[in-house]
Image 1 (cartoon, rainbow, N blue to C red):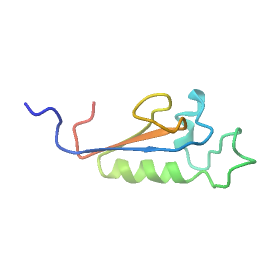
Image 2 (tube, rainbow, N blue to C red):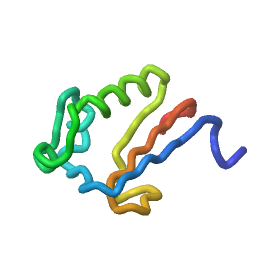
Image 3 (cartoon, helix red, strand yellow):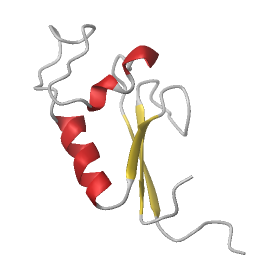
Amino acid sequence: EPPHSPGATLYIEDNGPGILTSERDKVFERGYRSETVQDTVDGSGLGLAIAREMISRMGGRIDVLQGEGPSKLDGTTLRIILFRDQE
């Protein structure tokens, strides 16, 4: 059996303030903006909602892995899994 199943896993990371554990699911809601960045970071709160919808339509998944995964920047890491059996 090969060590990895067919497909792709992408990790996207940043060096921002991070996402609170209590907000991990909320950040994927349309228009949601964390109180910790509302006044300091521009945005509409649509980006992650659109990303999750598009990835879902391709049979994939996007997750927040703050404090987990291969992060080197101490911010937030997003994991996108496409074209592979979901765990």
